[in-house]
Image (cartoon, rainbow over all chains, first blue to last red):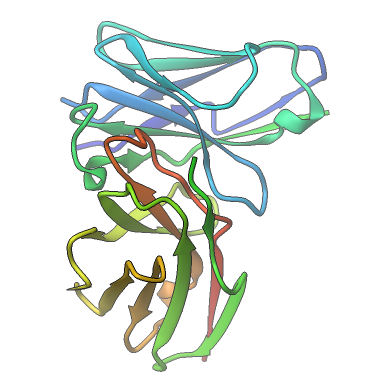
Length: 115
Length: 112
């Protein structure tokens, strides 16, 4: 079975632009979480979606938004990009929202560079 | 929230030696503590977890020790190999926390 996939792998944007990142969970997984990982830091939680509804939000500004589709894939949108948004954006999928943490599988991430 | 810290940002060991990576946490509401390994250019990969009601758990070449009294856990890697070179994160998880909290991580470098 394929793991979590994310696209694109790399992206370069200019300040003020908007970006959309995509994630496909493992087949059968209904929960998707997004994390931001700045260079030299651990991943920071942004959102969790389960059954197409937002179930959790981290301490990120409203410029960050996400959605989950009927096939459980997800998109993360970031508006009005700032230099500080440069990071690796990770998607993690799991079977359920409240399942054990060992169920969280991470994708390879999308490397976003804002210039 | 959760504060997660690691005692050393970097750790260098010789191939074949044992490695010990430490982690301190602040929130006692965690149900699990998970160790992740992140290789360059990849997402974090689950290594092993330990429930909060346990004090030791062993896996293949890895052992997790949990000391709830001082809110500290450690990951021990036996016979460290070059393929173990990566950044290691501990991440508390709990139903009340609702998400994984990662610290800065420890960069483990294994040299021949």
